[in-house]
Length: 525
Ligand SMILES: [Zn+2]
Image (cartoon, rainbow, N blue to C red; front, side, top):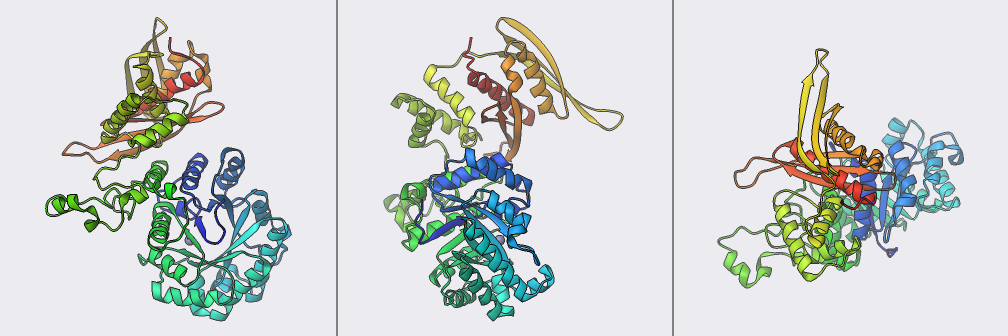
């Protein structure tokens, strides 16, 4: 477990998930949590159990499916409602029952918000904080408090804002995170207020939004003023202009301020982790992101090129390797020798140096064409098997497929797919109908194969993600499809890339079925 003296607290799964266009399934959330744990953050806020069924489900599944090495989970929720006991509030009960070792309670610290939004008295708001914090503490959970609208509240009524801090600390909250909820602060003014908050002798944390473009700067200023708990989101996700980018915050504090926040080797994996998370969120990565962007250490050739060759440090603020980035223009997520070897071992393969070399080359080549293997573990394993065992025999050979999309008189769109394939010496033709072309193809291929491989009945397509990738060197845009499939016991993901979306989907689908058959113990005939 991480050192308690300074907290790196991630809120991607709660606050970050507020970003427009960002939609995470429970499986996505579990995947993001694993990546964040890999970076070595201390706390992962999983969501708001009780208020959001998906988040309740997340905490339930996390108990059996998450094996966190560094991080502890935090459940987010509000102080009890006015006029009742915390012990009787069902929303507080959901926090208790989440099983999370930490509860982060959001509380009002702005007098006007108490009166206008909560519609209660300033005294009752303090009682709500005192009661909820001490109740959860007595039930054995650690409590952090998010003081919402703290900086605007301090401007409106400084005595009351500070009283909120004292009340929470006295009731047993370990940290009071001061939230710049509207994100309007600038570093100098924010630091002055943090100083005042630290003087209450409560332990102070910081939670910044980026509406002034200062979320990271504000976070650093707060740390200088005495905050010992920083909150932020992976890749700066969040509503409006986003939250403080936790990767930038961690890199700045560790590399420029000498803090020892995450293991050195985990920091050296940060670029890969940042990109792996974008594959889960399906948000195009910001190539200009500090430290982890593909352009963060990319130099325009020409003027500087020769000098860079002599001494790269003349043109870069840190050694990019410290955060797993590269001075080269292209960052290949998987293509490093070490990571391919590691991944192979995790899958149970001991790779010879020749295998590793040829696999790295294939991965590099495919990634340059738009494939990604970070989020497509099953495609990677198929590639690896081909490398180790030679091109595998197929469970089935596809003769052809076609899809028809029809708009009926009633305005309904119906897709019909026909698949012709050869398996176990037979030629099979099957037709499937679906609400979309991919759905129809999925049905047709399964119908064709289920007669020969009944275990395919358990296979299910659980997620489908599409991303349009910009073409390079004057070519057209290409489409990348990631498909997640499952049987009774596991999920796996496959990837397809093509100019045509249905072609890309078909590639991912064919691999998904092949991998499903391998999982079911069907060695190729
Ligand atoms: Zn926030």
